[in-house]
Length: 512
Image (tube, rainbow, N blue to C red; front, top):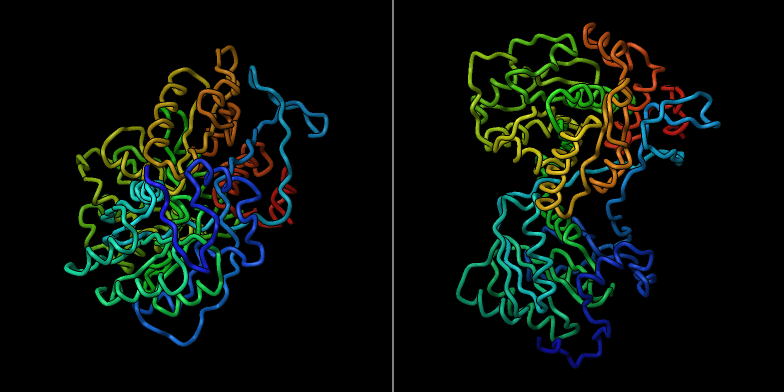
């Protein structure tokens, strides 16, 4: 590989671009911004006014100095056992699944930070001109991410000179990503030349070599939309692009949480419904529960609702679905929880493609901060598309071999298709059935590579009564350990603490 290009410039930063392994190491360490403390973090910062200026403009006013901190990488959440292991500090004797080692659960201090979902990126064309193959590989990685699934991305080497040569005779794309190790007048001269070929609506992201406030300000004056400095991950780049194309007419999209069972009958719907209820009631956050099992969905039964219109009506004509119609189709179960129920009939085949589901879900996401998706245990193109497109996935299992095998298959698929997302959460349900051989929880954790987020004991009387009465577990017995477990899972998924008035055995974990 050729030696990196050097530039004879007084402003040239001495640090080389880092290879991907070093990038990941520094992103996961406290030294990610080592050496740049006096400047703050520039990655991902965007000034609203300058971002709207066309590339090549010379605005007189300098943008505000960026002060945002770097985004944390995904961290694995602590596991929670609804029916805890015996612990002298817990105040009661708990149930311990076979082979499960006692664990300490660190108390949560203060309020949990809001988990803001990534906003949708529209159908745009992106062309990247990189100087180093490693940077091109990073852009390729970002292009394969679910968040950029609607975009068309091209990547080539050559940096600024290649971009100038290409667009001297071609129209420019919606977004240009250009890597340049230059600084000073040489960089500005080449940018000025490129600006002469750019269409008015083209946005430009520069990947530079130095974290320098004066350079950042000068680039913003010249109409550059964003300036990024390594080390960075594909997710940093994705979120930068997302911020540039945030729709001012519809700037909000709720977080989608997909619930699916590793096999039939493991209670994935029960977990989805109770978690949605806890998100809305405990955290005082609006939530929409979408029952996507069109033939056999039970959300209407569990919430004692029988709406005349259902999700099937919306899927039949997704182009007709607007905010007014959506308001009529959604059934309000509580002050903050709305239900989009399934038809739950066998009169139709309900044969819709992934595009119909995606169109409906895009509109539902505008209704609330959290959208919980209760998926059926089937494997069709639209189920796969929905899982891979969700912001978070929750897999419910029972402690048996078939669940472990299927969950492992799901994990492998999701990991391969979503390398920039955290792994799914695992809920082990119906643990501790008398005389039933069970796979130890630690074996599940080792096979899947993550600790379970929740272990629910087998309590047929409590869950049976809730189902028959059309109520949630917390309504039937708010002091039960299952209710506490669902509250913990809801807080983990939503990133929001339970309301202070909701007191219980583990209430202190979520309050201030």
